[in-house]
Structure formats: structure tokens, C-alpha cells
Image (cartoon, rainbow, N blue to C red; front, side, top):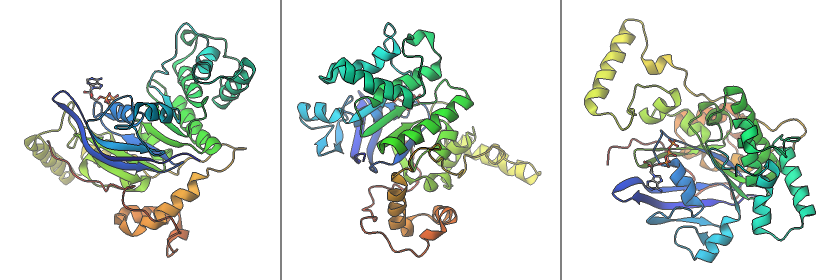
Length: 356
Ligand SMILES: Nc1ncnc2c1ncn2[C@@H]1O[C@H](COP(=O)(O)OP(=O)(O)OP(=O)(O)O)[C@@H](O)[C@H]1O
């Protein structure tokens, strides 16, 4: 089973630029979580901080007893091997075949024979559906195939935590759906803890057990998917609509005057029978979560997630609780499972953030 990642009070700046502050959340073991957020809000910096590639100035990231921020170098190096990291562009070596790219971590970090390496590499190539392409160079295949090769490489050291940075970037909607299914299938096969950073609303509404959002230097929410997907908090609602109307501006938060004008326009449009941009746009909704492809085992995380959510039902906002119970009426009145309760670290309720 995957390992829990516990983030406590994390703050990161580059010089005078604060990226985010006081971020606390727990990625539950073996569950799939998504981190949303407008461009430039520090999602990639967050991923890199979890694995110790970037050092925040305050806070802790606890993984398997090691603090990836302030721990000893050798402990961080050892713990980093529990992670598989899939970069936005696949980050493949252009002069190496896909096979050699995927074998690279095994040759670097283990003493396995070439025969053992071949077995693992071919297995992972099969998992991501790249059979027959192993001798090709990264420049000879499509962007989607490069992403899948990057994912295969992230998997060869049997990671217990998988971090995916924008697995959909540059992909068409069909390929994005394949990647979504692949991520769920992987979770069913290896039960790893997964965090996916994305802007893609389709992935956000169909893949994760949990969702969070970074905005304006803060974690504005983190919790079971229903919490964000039903939230009326303006920042969350705007992002999930993909609407230009709301607090999120092109490069920064909009000022109060602009927001007031938008509200007036929306009210006028509603009064004349029209709708505001936000209401006209399709919001990412509570679509059913993807299930593993035929022939694969069920996701073990589903029951653990269900137990956790049961333990926190009483603390969920009404709309989220209703959505949970509509999808799983069996949870109503069920006693909290032993160990299924939580100490609050797995949920940050949607909140407004003001400029800091
Ligand atoms: N090594 C670095 N040194 C200085 N600034 C950095 C460094 N890495 C990232 N930044 C800055 O941190 C901010 C957040 O960047 P990051 O790439 O994490 O955003 P993001 O949310 O992943 O954006 P996108 O969705 O567009 O990929 C940006 O302003 C970026 O310029």
C-alpha cells in the first residue's frame, strides 16, 4: 500500500516572491488526489517540495518518518526512492530509446542484472500500452506516448507515492481520457498514493478521491472530491467553471471595483433573462469517478476512502455531504469505522483568501 504524505505549515518564497504560505494537508495512503490552481500558483513548486528537490523555508513534509524539508540529506535521498515523478514533458533523454530511458533509474539506483531489468521494463511498458515502441527515440513518438513513457519510467522502482505534473498538458481530449483511465488503472494495480497536478477539469471531476486548490499564495481547499465539486466559494466555483468572471484575473487577483462591475453585469443579464458567464458555462460536476478497466482488480483505496469520509461526514458542508450520500446511500447512519475518523489534517474547507 502507498504511504501517507503529511504536509505541515509549508511556506516557500523565492527571494521576495512568496509562492505559498502555511500549507497543511495530508495525502491519504493509497488514494488519488488532485491539486488544482491557476497558472503560476506554485503547483509544480509544491510537487518538488514534497520530494525534497525544492526546500521551503518553513514547515515539514513527513514521509515514512523522514522530514523531506529539514531531515538529514541521506534520509531524504533514501526516502526519495519511494517516489515516482512524472514530469510535464516526460523529461526523457532525447538520444536514448524508450527502453533505455525507462531502464535508466534501475541502472542508476539498483544492482539488478540486465535480465531482471528487461523483465521490469517490459512489464511497465505493457502497463502504459507502449508495447512495440521500446526501440523508438522520444523524438519519433507523439506527445501522449512520451507522457506514457515518462510514467513507465516513474514506475520502475516500484514507487509507493506517484507525483504527476500536468499529465494532460499538450494532449487532445481523447488522449487525456486515456491518461485518466491509465492513472486509475495504475492505482488499482499498485495501490500507490498519487498526487496529480492539473488544470484539466475532466481529470479533476473523474479521477481523484480528493481534491485541493492553490490560489493567491494559499491552499484554499483540500478534501474529498465532493467538497470542491459542490463548493460555492467564488474562487473554487470560477475555476471549476473555467469562467473569466470571478476573483481570478489574467495574471493576478482582480480588484474589488472590477468584481463589483462584473456582479452588476451579471445581475443585469439575469434580469433580462440571460445568465452570467459563470452560469452559462458548464461547471466541472460530480461525474461518476472512473473505475478500473475490465480485468483489473478493484481499487483498494476505495474502501479506505469510504471509511475516512464516513468518519468526517458530520464536518462536511451540507452540499458535499448530500453529494456523498446521494452517491453512496449506505453511508447514511453507518457508524464511523474504527480508524476511519480523522484528526482534521485531511481536510481544509473552501475559504476565501485575500491578497497578502
Ligand atoms: N527555481 C525557481 N527560482 C525562482 N522562481 C521559481 C523557481 N521555480 C518556480 N519559480 C516561480 O514560482 C512560481 C510558481 O511556479 P510553478 O511552476 O510552481 O507554478 P504552477 O502553478 O505549476 O504553474 P503552471 O500551472 O503554469 O505550470 C512562478 O512564478 C515561477 O516563476
